[in-house]
Image (spheres, helix red, strand yellow):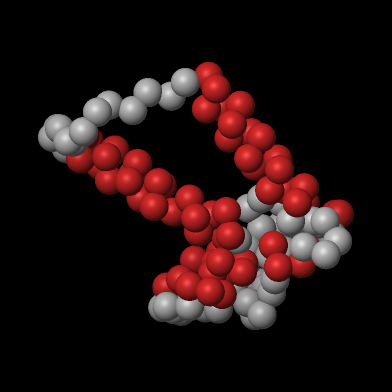
Length: 115
């Protein structure tokens, strides 16, 4: 569990610049609070803070482990993943869609709720 709770320590965890200017959430808003909730064992609250990031964590973890294993000179089992141009387009569309949808009225459950 983290030493400081990002839900109440605003001096240690500054506000998102995009959110401060517009009042809207960017795709990264809520990641710190989501990681804190996850470290505290509260998966539902973590999902509430940033659904996309929590759903992407298994892929991020797999990529980090693969990178670390290769970094020490070992081989990682399985096929070598290749980044394709369509993957960049898909990532931009996914992030952009999440950015827009989480700020739509009536979809408050996707917002990076505080507290």
